[in-house]
Image 1 (cartoon, one colour):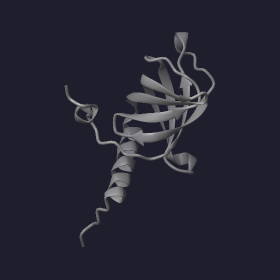
Image 2 (cartoon, rainbow, N blue to C red):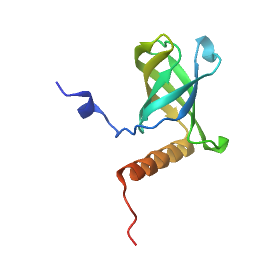
Image 3 (tube, rainbow, N blue to C red):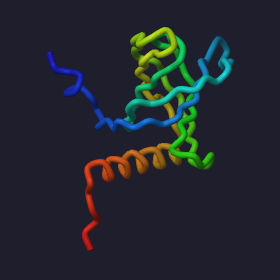
Length: 126
């Protein structure tokens, strides 16, 4: 049986980003937004440390902040694919990104690539 590492479609980056999320209810209504922190991200999803339990299959409206500047906020739709209870106020949650605008996807991928380059220490050659 392949390990989860071998089944991953995208490389993951261990980085803490602020992520606001709302649960989509019946008829597309959204709950109030809650704030979470990512513990890793990839081009296809992210792992959040959420303050409340979420059901597998829950549809989420996501706002991903790539820094302190509000202009660096991305919008996406995602789905909860797993969750582990860490404590009464912390739930490790796997989210798959299902929909993101083309512009936000480009900004997200550029951010992930830039952060990975910094982490690995690649230098541009003159």
